[in-house]
Image (tube, rainbow, N blue to C red; front, side, top):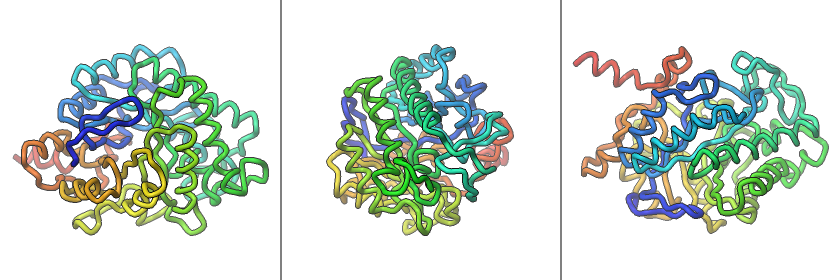
Length: 367
């Protein structure tokens, strides 16, 4: 089941295993470095069905972590064309994930004051952001659309919107971060208006045949936050708008032990902690649905597809330690991923080295 093709929009994946968007810290001024391109090449060579890039800012004030990718201007388009071409040469498919971090943006990275649906204090906000004006909303919607246009021009096979983990789209969806009293706040219909307008504007610019995906929280995993029932309703709306695929995640950095990158996944029972969210969404939509979150074992991944919980699985941290994981599974070695879910891989990224598995590096040096 895992190794059967999957059609998403107009594109067919050779298998149902995706590399979920992972911040790598391997860009300079928004431009992918040779180191990052080689990482994507290695994933393509090792049979990852779809590579989703690290989250890519559409506007400088929406930048969070340092050394991340940016599609906010035309000047760097040739660099992205080269990245895509190199992946395609290796018979890989690649999507770019577009994001605006909203209140989670960091002034140290962007040099600008963050903006958000509401000017509030929130655990994941470095400072109280400026409340977005109608003009800000229109401008950011256009930023998403022009970035998607650049992605299409660069040759990316898909665009994925980041609508999860407490970033701007999720901030509009969540009643915890959206306290607006205008047409963008209050009811779910109003809170989902920003997302709807982003999707429609992107469709205007790239056309209906270019496949558009979204990473969506199935639940914020916070009392009073965006809930699974609301996620189901939003998913049904997105299907009507022509979204081709939903990757279901959950939580944010504010969700404590229910964050998107949970630690100590040392048993099958702890794997796929977003599966129930994915199952409920898949029951209500006809488009393919994927799920991410703690998948480490071949058997777990296979059963997700076999039991109809989702149509595809996404992995992130396991590929940091083992870019060859899927090739290993294909060869018949079905042992679980070596990743121990310690999250130490992100520390080198913050220091400017780019993410890598420090556990694996220590073991290599030891030998």
